[in-house]
Image 1 (cartoon, one colour):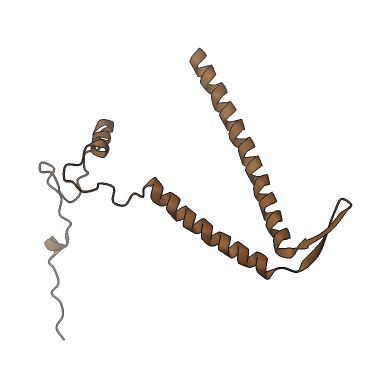
Image 2: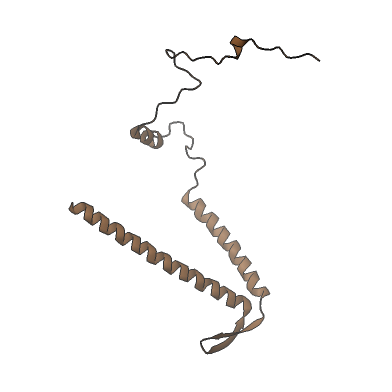
Length: 140
């Protein structure tokens, strides 16, 4: 078996770059100015091909959401159909009976509405804070 050749001490030293010549290996590109970035993203396409091939249109997103929603609805219908057992409900003195699947569905919708109400309250609170800050800045 042959041994690999041992490099000389001069070959082991790291080479020092010549500071008078620009280095292509470690040079950083010139940063873009804001106007250059704007022009590169808003310039018209002269090749005739789409610049945003990866970007989905709003219609495509709505179509995908519609398909996902319909699939979830089918799963929900199957869930309710398979859970037809009648359960007795008691709530603050009110007594009644309903199907288990329907009861669980109504509970989930009520929980979602509760979360949505809290989210709307928080959004309105943040909007009022921002509005007050804008008024304060405009009066200064």
